[in-house]
Image (tube, rainbow, N blue to C red):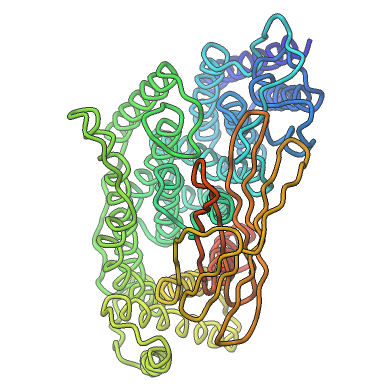
Length: 625
């Protein structure tokens, strides 16, 4: 049976990890520069066993082996093959197995690819990484076994949550997991470097590729999840500060700070301890997100089915990990010269870091405060966009200015650059032209627009100037350009978006400013494992004399019995027309949500540019300025 095979593979992977820890500890006591071949062999065995266990679970889903309880609860025979495979990680047990496999993969790749010649450093990194792997394998097998059998064997499964049956959400979890689970390797590297007293340049060289890769996948994972929520959940926006969204954003903020700090560490001492702290905090925040999603304390559309025992285990592990890290840090952290010259490039990077930490604190408080309030008083509240926008938006202005001004300064030396220059002048002129068309009255929004334009124009000039001098930092230029575009288009989107909710019957028309919405008819369709009620709407733009036809759906799934509301989106380069409908119980009246969302595609493109800039660090395309 696949159930037994999967348990054997998982247990073998756990055993290989424990043996690897033992051999690594023994190896620490042996003099010499080379790591024994048996370390490499058991690392390979562990990888093979771990991947085999995951492939076994996938096989159970593909062949609908309902003797495995996990397959029975999350799949059924009529589900398309693509969603059978993605259903493997669409639940707590399967996603945890994927989580562990990424831990194992990063551990193996570090052993094989890392060029650091310090044997003890590499061995200690492997020990810390395999302690994480072993603990999570024990958790998997004892509390969250994806291969647990069910008897008698059912003839049919319960099916996967319909909102998870989507191509974007199928790839969203693996991308995110590579991101924040990948941060485990620099958690292990950080602790090992403290004990072995690795010098700053070696630590920076070791960390940079791993931070770049995990940051890249984390960014893409957040983007794909945001796109999915946009068209699948009927939210009609790119970010809603949902607690689970926040759980993926918090490690990303720390990764971003770490990515910049490593650049400083390559050039001078003084940020060694700070880089160590960021490395530890990033993985810690990843585990915090895992705890929030799997413990049941958060109420979100995409948390996993929860069990208090699982939450207790993760919380206990988190506390042990944090206190152990604190002990190692204070036991081995070196003293440093932390004197930085004002207006040097590293000074601006440090300021950028503190902005990231501030944003993290705001998001963490907004996410956890309702939980603590509910626990202490029983009062239930939700913290939404108004809180985050009110606190975070003003701080975008100095952050944008730092991102624009910082790269113009030199490393280590202090050189004051005049604030007002031709680029700022061009930015003001561009803003005035745009303001003439949008006529936005909010001062804060206007300032954010101005400084985002300033960043965009500065990076364009940087690109041209560096290209002319044959010394181009593509990584920084593309990422900063993408971030400037992101803030610019988010601001324009918030100013120009149109949204209206109204009730309508079939045959009715609704006038909304320049638009006339005609609810023409309904039709039904039977598609695979769901029945669809499709609305036919005609949207007339009176100003442009154009007509758009949209078909939002209400889907009724039978495995499991669920109703979903599918948005209909007519997307072009510059604007999206967005429509959802839901039935008002026991009536022939439908609630309609109509939105015009400008520049959505440019928002997605901006994030792609940001992630592309980050991954260029890994391929070393840039040359240092």
